[in-house]
Structure formats: structure tokens, C-alpha cells
Length: 167
Image (tube, rainbow, N blue to C red; front, top):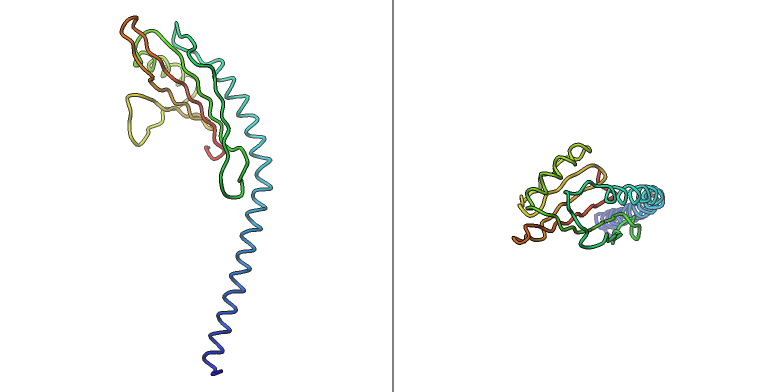
């Protein structure tokens, strides 16, 4: 085999050995990250579950509000990566009927939430049908679900989300 071809084969072999070491290192790093981060996620999720339920139990609603649908709780996981199978996201959802218009309800929530330290989130596509508020590690979405003229009332939804990655 000529010198040039041998050198090319040698470089190819070295390239594949380096590639194998990098692959093994990435797999090992991914495993290490997942095994060391999963307990932290579980602990943070337990605290978030208590705080989220407590917030939804004690949130000051507009006067005259009545429960329309009970509180639903949903846990979800990452599909891929080192945290595959770890429950890293919680969503709580409930709906209420309240007298007045949705805008009146939003004014009520704005006063209450700013007093509790929540900040209004500006979304990419503004909507008159919902508002988002953030207080890390939570995001609260207040949505309009309908308006009735007689008697003058509206239905609104509260959706509280916790995500491991939200800071």
C-alpha cells in the first residue's frame, strides 16, 4: 500500500476511535446528569404540588364566583433525554362562573395578583381571550370561556403550570 493511502487509513482509524470515545463520554455524561438531577426534580415537584394546590385553594376570586369544573391535575414527563420518564411538568386546571364581564374579572385578578408578587407575561401573540401571569416557578393563565347576557355573567378558567425548567 502506498504511503499516502496508509496515512489516510491511519487518520480514518484515529477519527473513529476519537468518535467512539466522544460517544461513550456523551452517554456517560447524560446518564450522570439524569441520575443526579432526577432526585432534585422530584423534591422540587413535591414542593410545587403543595404550593400550587394551596394557591388555587386560596386565590381570591371575583365576588359571586361559583365553581364550574373541579380542579384537574396532570403530570407529564420528557419523552427523550437524560430526564426521560421523570415527571417534570404539572398543570392544574379549573373553571368558574362569575357575574359581570371577563374584563371586570381581569381587573380583579390584576389587582390581586400584582399584590401577591405576580408579573404579567407578554406573549408573542396578544389575546383578548386570556392573560398570562408569572411568579417563578409558576405560570398562571386566566382564560375566557364564554359570556352570557342574561344574567350578565362569564365563565373563566384558571390554569396553573409548573415546569422544572422555568426559573
